[in-house]
Amino acid sequence: MSTSPNSHPTSPSSTTSSPTHPPPISISTTTTAIQTAASTSSPTKVQAALDSLTTILPTPPSSLTSTSTTSTSPSPPAFVLLTSPEITSQISSLLRHPSSGSGDNHLCRWLYDTFHSSDPSLQIIVLRFVPLISGLYLTRITHRPRQPLAGFEAILLALYAHETTTRNNHPITVTIPDLSHPSIYHESSSPQRNNSTDLNIAVISSSLEPHGTIRSTRRARIVGVALELFFGKICVMPTESKLDFCEFLYHWAGSLNNNDNDNNDGQGRILLPWELLGPCLRILGHCLLGKQKEEELLLREKGYRACKSLYNRVMHDVNPKAILAVGSLLRLVNMEKELDEVDYTEIQSTRVISI
Image (cartoon, rainbow, N blue to C red; front, side, top):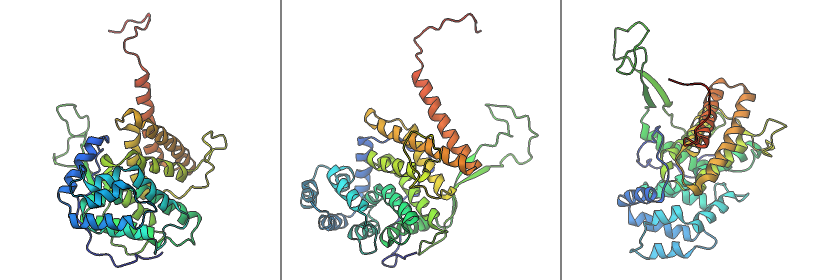
């Protein structure tokens, strides 16, 4: 596949994406996170990025021009870029254009350069569009393989190179308690091992090898790493970004049931190896199980639709690991729905006395 437009500069430093479940999004959380990032950002880099973006957008909104010319703006510039419907809708429209994604695309160049600015607040802006970029790229490369997509690939490779440098050949792991050892909560029936410090290590994301191009054998891994970075900042991402992800995942899974009532014709179906499916399930879990506000109920609805379509897909593929993961997620959602429907104030009549 095509290489990055330019050689990659030194990857910017930031925290590695966390495998833990992030807190639910809120405006106050978003503002605090952006202000924290803005406190370490470079005003010169932010100003340059804003000025450059005004030349790319068809109709730069007043919020963008006033932010770039006024140093006493009440909100950090990155917060305006992340939450302004006027700006994000124009960027999304440009990315969705049928001819977008090429190596000479100005918006792709802006996103690539903005992430390599190493400014934390600007990097969050690029991560906000990762679901859209990943969705468009994987869909087009699968169904229109001859379309030039060097611009999308350059952005994804920049994210991958950043994470490769950050991890420094180390995987992301978690420690799982060994139930064969007794604890204050349980007694073990298994023979006790001599070494009481044995640990069960689960690999959440394996170590990364440097790649300068995207080939078909590396594609799922590189896009999966970009989604891992998005998940690491999902607590500050707007709902629209997560809706983009759920919509693409729904089409990626494709409908494989002729009696399916969700009108998914399966034309957007792609390969879903675990390198890509794993990060997708983490994001989907946040969309389905996170404590959301009333106005974000649409996100749960879209996530549930994507989860059902994904379950049909993995059942068709007879993928045991994926069936267990997606099926467990569906059961958790259904259990939560059942609990929400229970009225604990209602006295049920029964002839059985429980002691």
